Image (cartoon, rainbow, N blue to C red; front, top):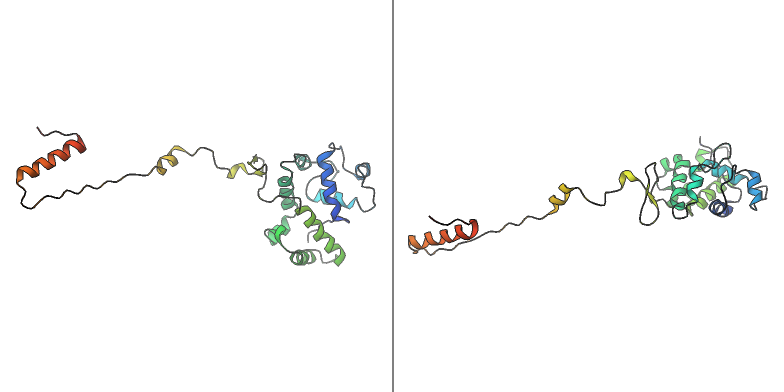
Length: 211
């Protein structure tokens, strides 16, 4: 069974994530760092377990590349969205688009996954997930070859189409033109007149002149 951490006060997560963007990257994001930035409640350290769960800090409380990537305000929501999907991968395997699911669906999932956890903890687990999702963008998933799209979010380079299409694609897109000619000849036309008609067609269509 998966172990899903939760913040004792989920609403504080937005303030904590804002601090990540606005203050320097610490050597360690521990209880002392929290207190330095105003998180002095005995409940606040629970948020550190959430940050570790989504990969913003490692097991030694050192900020990771995800933490540093989140400091880029234009990309922050996309970085968080990818971190949530990675941390909650078991949830997303069971409930695709989990960030769009209602509270009942999420509670039922966490209750099955954590049978020894009581209702209050289950509720906080759901609210923690929802609080994170409110700040995230799930439209793209950053990869090692990530690039930035026009709206500032990160998209996978492997799925990004080239700005200029290959030549063969351009050529195949050029429409072809087909023209039909119809020649009406009177039934009583003399042979000389018919010959003149075809000589004229050969001259104007193919550049051939009768010898």
